[in-house]
Image (cartoon, rainbow, N blue to C red):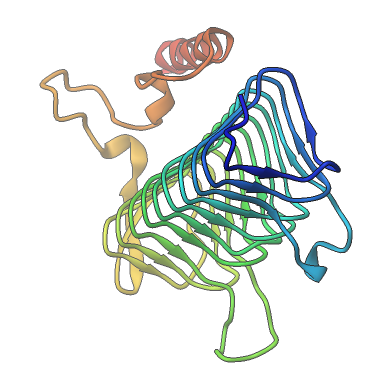
Length: 252
């Protein structure tokens, strides 16, 4: 299952049923879990001193699409999925079921939780911290230098269930609270409270998220989104969310 044109280091550790496509390079000190697929023209475990000798570890059942580059020294849980031409720098630690869209760029030294979804052309600056079940839509940028260029690094923090709409910029050191929504084309230069909507440049408070209604004629609130959107999530998690929604309905 390794193409004849692929170059795989003898020091790399490939699990069972791993597929490696044409012209892909897998460097030393790479660990790839069982059942993973690495498409053509990828470079996995790109050497860098910034990895400080740490291995690149990719969990089971990953799908890394063509022309993607993963630097040494990062770690990913099972079922990683990428689009094409993704770049992930060193010291990125991500949980299970992480999805990175085409042309995604993660600049390293980042912490990312479980079931995080990046759409295409997302840029994540160094030292960003992203929780679980976060959605980041196309052309979003998380920055980290408060007075560029400098040696100061202040990564943004995005808490669980937050959603950042397309073409928004999150400025250095900003914290986005759990379940918040950042409107499209926003420039966020201050912390955003949990379960609120912020939008504009500079972004300002708009409303609480539960004031936003689904545009499906049902009259239901759009947020928390986890109370109605369940595609791709495990049944146990969905049941937990439904129980949470039922409890809130009983209180209202």
